[in-house]
Length: 487
Image (cartoon, rainbow, N blue to C red):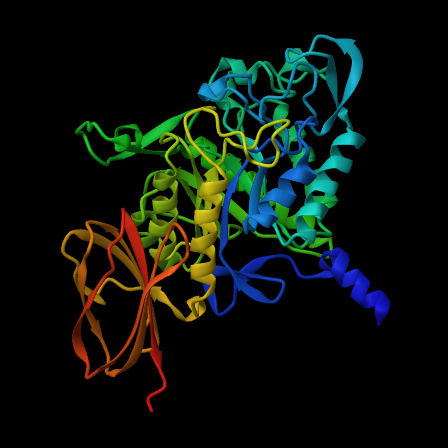
């Protein structure tokens, strides 16, 4: 018995558990280690494994202490040049000669990022030891790891650093236009991509705290415009928000289906089956087709309508990346609340306060297009605690419960007659007109910055409309309304 207790305490028992999956009672949420879960984080810029100078143990310990339960990593097929996208201290841009991808180095000099070229016929033992250690350490802390297998190239400078570029390996990969890298028209590179997927899938099969994403931002290299959100410029932070919706074209979609079709049969012969996510677009989009292998629909820089328009798929909908709207914490806090109270099941902000040497997330000097800080993580913990205080498996988006909210925009989840969660952004105070059934209710107004209950009241309600006045608030506030047993 004592040995079992020690095993549980060490987190090693988690290796034997079933992997994270969609909850069978409500597939808009996760089931992880026997509990319904929403994933919420403000996490580093995806280089925790491929950048060997990054202290991932300190990083994961910080995430855990701050109440974050999720992180996202890039697998190593893509790496960035220092300074890319205006990020000064970028964890996804290792120092010269320090990039650690899945492939082994050779003795042949000439890699564009410093050091020797790569041999795509040999795997890097150092990389896979680090990858598995990272996932294991995350699992001990209850942190789920999204492994993003591939990424768009965006521009020449990133393709020039890719191990798959023929200039960077000794294997004679095809010299292609980088815009075709993640398509079926990529010469002999497809075989190398499939080999990498199979290897990573096998190496991580034992873990329960992993899911795979096919590709980051697959629309970026050959975008197809499908919708204009707003043709009008603004003077606010939203002027940097996407104004058009671009999705991946047919060539990209065919390649993504091919990668998904590699993961599934590879795992068929292994003990565990892991979820697969697909990244669709920035902003919002009514997805027209979902491959049968895909369980998670991902959006970047998203509006809550990305949830509303895709809820019918009965799959988890994730806000997989934010972090390009300046360094104000409030922008990302409000994005998280908006998305999850619209019915989403995952929120990830890029947190630029995690850098090499400051893996405790305290590097709050300007570091790029976004923010991130201990303060923001504290605020996102309030969001996570709020969601997990609800019977959210029984809840769904509710556009009818709030009849009036003068001066405020609202999003609501409800289990009608049992529990309601309402998020308000706008002017303070606000008097809501709610349409709820007869009963005795407790209304708790939650401060989204501190987690304090700023107002707590109970009332008997005969049914129909009920007005509830909020306490004073700045920018936003949340309401938890629960029916209590009648006396």
